[in-house]
Amino acid sequence: MIKTGKEIIENPIFARIGAAADRLGVDAYVIGGYVRDVILGRDTKKDIDVVCIGSGINLAEEVAREFNMPEHQVSIFKNFGTAMLKVEDWDLEFVGARKESYQRDSRKPLVQEGTLEDDQNRRDFTINAMAVQLNQAHWGKLLDPFDGLKDLEARILRTPLEPKITFSDDPLRMMRAVRFAAQLGFDIYPETFEALQVEKSRLEIISMERISEELNKIILCPKPSYGFLLLDACGILPIIFPEFVKLKGVDTEEGKGHKDNFYHTLQVLDNISKHSDDLWWRWAAILHDIAKPATKRFDPKKGWTFHGHEEMGARQVPTIFKRLKLPLNEKMKLVQKLVRLHLRPIALSKEEITDAALRRLLFEAGEELEALMTLCRADITSKNGDKVKRYLKNFDKVEEKLKEVEEKDSLRNFQPVISGEIIMQVFDIGPGREIGLIKVAIREAILEGQIKNDLASAWDFMLEEGSKLGLSPQIQINDLN
Image 1 (tube, rainbow, N blue to C red):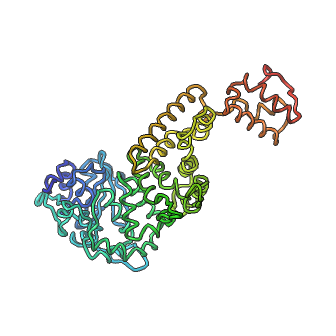
Image 2 (cartoon, rainbow, N blue to C red):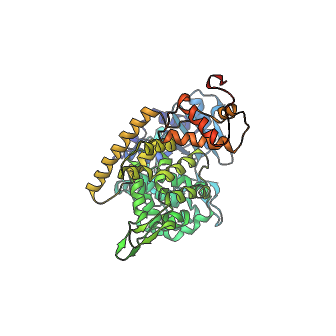
Image 3 (cartoon, rainbow, N blue to C red):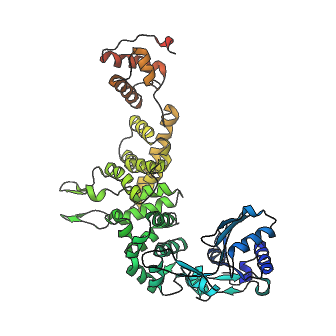
């Protein structure tokens, strides 16, 4: 683990920031996440926070001159006393050191100019409060008043000041505590964790957009289940995501129980996270069984059943996304489709696989087939390793068959060759119920393998279906426009 400040600021960009600060006669420091990540040996993000004793805006403008950049490339936010500048691949943010005080009903602080110590006091966690000086006279001096370095070595997350005050002042820090713990694989210090439990209700003053932003970062962690378990243990999860908490628990009737769907879902989430960084695939894993509590029934012969949970779950997706302020666009529709279809490949793996069933799955999954199959593989959870291997082998067979049918019939996202316009032209009729009936009949015949998806095969079938409805063709196949 790197421990010296000079090693942290080896990047040549820091010497030039320091030179600009020296010209202005202000003390400047790199602080926060960049320092933390370099010490941990993590890949650093391309953003650097610089705090100075004085005007962050003036320092940003001087750094721009240092790099021979025009002034208009400095983005200035006077209300916040900050400025941003992009140098090469780096996003630099400059701010003057400040101290903050909060009112009970707002997380927006009252800000005053302050010392470096004031600025470090207002930081969320000790590991984010370490600063390294950039001025030549004290080049590479590490200022770590809260022993953040020791906390990094101990892999502990702790607040610089009294944690209840820290979280009450800015409740979003509670979500950030869980997020950092999940991202870094750290423990939360006992007093800090207790404060999460005590102050959790303060989240009511935080917008759902900000909460969901942190939740999504937890979901994107290498092992997101850890973050969810922390949220549940401190009592935040029931506040922000009550539907998920309802999955907890096991009922028993006549000696028959079912798996705890809360822990099963977390395992599915971890499983899919090993194979995809796609946020929405991971959301599908979270929501795939969300309707099981509402559909749970006990049958003396079959045991516990959850009939229709996939369809009910799909209907719940827009409601949950809307409440969490997640996008209601194609991302939501992707999640909805995966939830609706997540049992289909599993059912195919347990029975005789027909080409018709494969065609229908290809048609309904479309471009989301890979996501669906990845989710279904992740959904195979059991303490019995042999059982898991057996199911996965069956899945291999399903995927092989899907490839064969896809290559043969080109059914993924297919459109029947006979369109509504062609039907109206052939029978010389306008839009109406008959058009829909004929189109559905043609589509079903193609999916069932009764006819091929080409004009010659579908033409006669269309005429037969039209005849059943009392329609007569007015043109021949060669007369089509």
